[in-house]
Structure formats: C-alpha cells, structure tokens
Length: 124
Image (tube, helix red, strand yellow):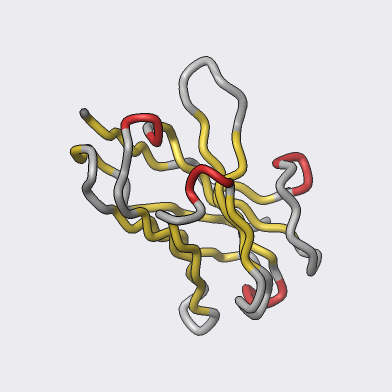
C-alpha cells in the first residue's frame, strides 16, 4: 500500500511564501500523476494543482494559477507546491494525492492514494 507524506505547512502572513513537499512510497513514483488538493473547514476538498508523470503538463485552480507552481523530482520521489503571494483564503489543510493514470484529473475521487495533510494558515 502506498504512503504519501506532506511537509512544509505553517503559519504565515499574507504575501508570504511557502513550499510544500510530498514524498511518496508508492512503487515507481514516475508512473504516477500527482496532485495537490486543499480543504478548508466546512468546505469540500478542492483541486489545487496537478502534474503529469514526466512533469511536462501541469494544471491549476484558476485562483492560484499565477501564484502557485507544482513541480516534481522523480529521482527523489517528491512533488512540490511552491506557493507565493499567499492570501488568507488559501488557509486550508493541503493534501498530496497520487493516481496511476497518465491523465490529470481534478476530481479527488480519481486519486486512490492520499497523504495525511499539512496545515497552511495565512493571517491577514
């Protein structure tokens, strides 16, 4: 069974940056499409970003497109989410997810592997 471990969350002020990391133990990491999702209290889990196996194709939630960057290092079995110009509305628990298919999907139900989440809190 696969394991994903997120790190890098924390409490920051609006306008600050954070980089989240997710290290995976799910077999051959390079065969998985990776995604980042977030969930704020009382809200549904929301797609944030995803990246294909080779890293050539990326997709983002519109509200983060100009501020967040997803990347991966297949040699380190790690996917990253660089978050710049953070806003209070970015406050949520951020989850890393993996799926064994090549195509990016924004539906969290299409990702069978999940990490435990890391809290990101942005104060105004």
